[in-house]
Length: 430
Ligand code: GDP
Ligand code: IMO
Ligand code: MG
Image (cartoon, rainbow, N blue to C red):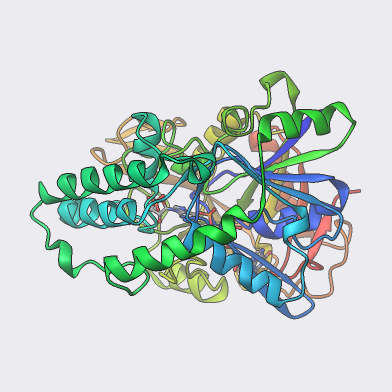
């Protein structure tokens, strides 16, 4: 048995949550392998809408086991809030949820530091979700982190106090008014109190050595799907550094983040929007600043699931898509939000870049210091509603052509097309 992977090929928010939920019935286990509550994965069904931040998107299927892997970082406060929403909806969440003891914990002072770093950067800020992602992964790599398994050990309180002291000392180096920083709308002290209270909820769950847990499931012939967060162009190594997140969002991250050997990776489902969006700062070659960009944002309801910020919008970027396919070894493409392009006579796709006057089909090393002008090709739009479309065969000819165009350019089959946010609005190639 191998582990299949579903991950984003753009700058996040491709619709990973929706598709993991759709695919869940084919899997026994869904496992998150990286990122933290910077993620916001939306799932809609039966006129209900949920946004998950840490809990895998398989949670709505009764029999599926959900695992938060060692590569994920957890904020007990956000986690508790997320869990409560699910419990209130009547789901028996705790039974099917397993947390890696090796997952690192986001402390209140990590969130404080995140805010301090962003403020200190001024114009150069990353546009972080301010969930403490950068500082928590920094502590993990510098061997100063606190893991879920540490929360029950006698030395925890002392470790906590030492980390907090270190973080405040670090924060004091910057010309930032620390007192003015709030976390979840609360003062540091109030938030810290609530954070400690939320530990009990986290500790009431099934805490496991998830690498053994998952490999045993594989040995028993169980099917596992790894759920990515963020997207390839936000990867710490291959994204548009420094405008990235702090984890490996790519297929390789599954091995580190779950303890799954590379030889045990099966299919890689690469998910992308029929156009592009980005939230936060950083390069975005095909970004549109005109009414077309505005139309994509309005029709696509492009506002962040975690922060509510408007997402920047633009045409599909084939240079970036091909790069992401290469890095991840994508076996199947899944195209999301096709319906957002319903009212366009013409669709554009960037097939090459003109970088400082020279044509290239590669992502430049320095995306911010150079002038990137996308070279577009025009494709005829379908210019009609997809509401009645129930299968690949029923797709309008122009949409079929758009799909074929992407397949020919990338050499990878498109096996799923999404035509609306609801679970049911999903076309799967037979
Ligand atoms: P994720 O982070 O990759 O899980 O994606 P998000 O949930 O942050 O953002 C995707 C947004 O698009 C959510 O609001 C979804 O409900 C919505 N969505 C997903 N698929 C489709 C689709 O095919 N059409 C439309 N119109 N919306 C979609
Ligand atoms: P999902 O899983 C979109 C972006 C932030 C910022 C940068 C760094 O929902 O697709 P961080 O909080 O990690 O320090 O922010 O990365 N970002 C996301 N953008 N979707 C996400 O997750 C994101 N997670 C982080 O906006 O630009
Ligand atoms: Mg999202």
